[in-house]
Length: 161
Image 1 (cartoon, rainbow, N blue to C red):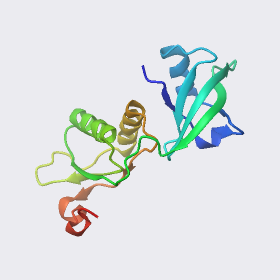
Image 2: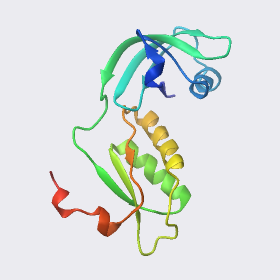
Image 3: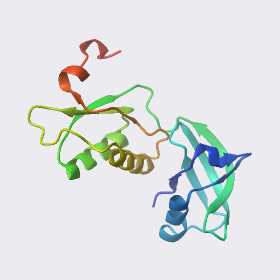
Image 4: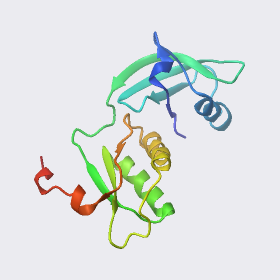
């Protein structure tokens, strides 16, 4: 059971927070958290927060207080930019999620000669990345670049910098 959720940075003020409707629903109805439970939150931009749930509003919104905050928790000290060939949707989802869990910081979908598709949905990839971030308790959602050809993406000078 993951006690890791997303919070909008604007929803944290004076060491208090509230979650959006979807995250609140997941914590209350799926994970069945109670008042005084502790959870971990990330803003996806490097901030991680250890929190306590103080209240469920009448609109089923989770409110609480920040116990402690951290920066770039569970992040690698080096930059991994992955070029991932575009493959079938189900396999692409698994590849993206596992790549995020492994610590990539940037992903570029690559259109190759034998690629069946030429585009990917950035919205779907972001959703999959969010799942990977929650699963691995990372604090940053990796950057997604636009589709590129291998020749445009590959830079031999960038290796081992």
